[in-house]
Length: 452
Image (tube, rainbow, N blue to C red):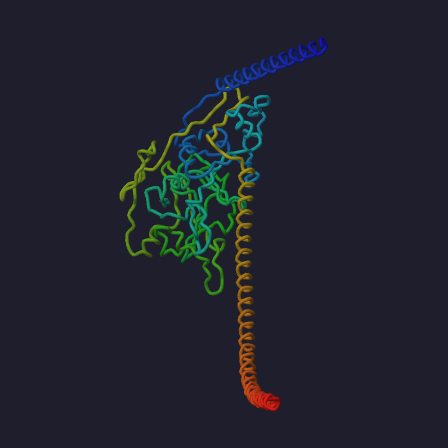
């Protein structure tokens, strides 16, 4: 009994000591992490970026505060933390390759606020996936999908061809950042800090005009935009006589002419984004050509910058466009760095996996529906066969009933004849019987009279 009590006491003491040590370690760790985080916060500073600084680069994905975009776009899509390799980007930023700017954060990975900093080392960035509600269908029956620079209208402005989108969210992504078209996830927007009337590449022929979203890592260098080869599938192509129409995507077709498909690669390149009078301008198709096709002068809209979303407005003479000031984070000794991130986001791999599971479930449901339809058809066929069999049996039975009826009729006639014959025969027998009875009666009478 005493031995059990001693063992229980020792066990209790061991548990209490373990709990104390664990609590102390956790408190110490949290304290160290908090102190480290404060140290990093104190080690960094922010500076307002000059709006005339056109030296945009991949470094901006790690050093610019895009909180305004995160907040404004979150209700209209999803932010994804994605590896640059996963979406076909090949970033080589000074932050990730320069030893002096090493963003190592070993030992403090548990802090959510600094987890994004390590993500830069792993070439992880935040991209925006538009909601399906913003999608359009290029052909009748197609599933709606979001396509940049499609659902809107080209407008002539003092900054060149401006793409006017139908919603505030689409307005943001039409004038900032770049686009990547992933085979798995479709179009995704990569943030950028420079404003432009539209970040597109232009091509045209005598009859057609085409444009495509510029991909990531394409920037102005010495006031010239260098554009890589873009997949022809990413270009919108419309007849120039429809260039100014609202919802311009409705005029994009397969463009088969004289049996040959019209491709953007067969068109000539037209000047696009350039710097004019120390401002970004979007050249595109020549204004005089479009005016001649439409047979009228095309009004020029004045562009003004609005620092707040509340000041954004669009009238027939003037566009007050969203033009927030951006801040760049810097570190004093170039050792540690914190990257701002969206309040809510999903990891790209998890998002794709969930999407794939959803697609499989949809396919399974469709197959189940098809099977149910086949079962209904099969059941219906069986019902028809049973009904036909029943009808055949009825017809057979009706035939047999007729035969039976006929036989009964024939048998009834014969039975009647037999009955008449029997009646006749019985009648004769009855008469004979009566005669015999009469005869016997007289004999009895005679017999009696003779005795007397």
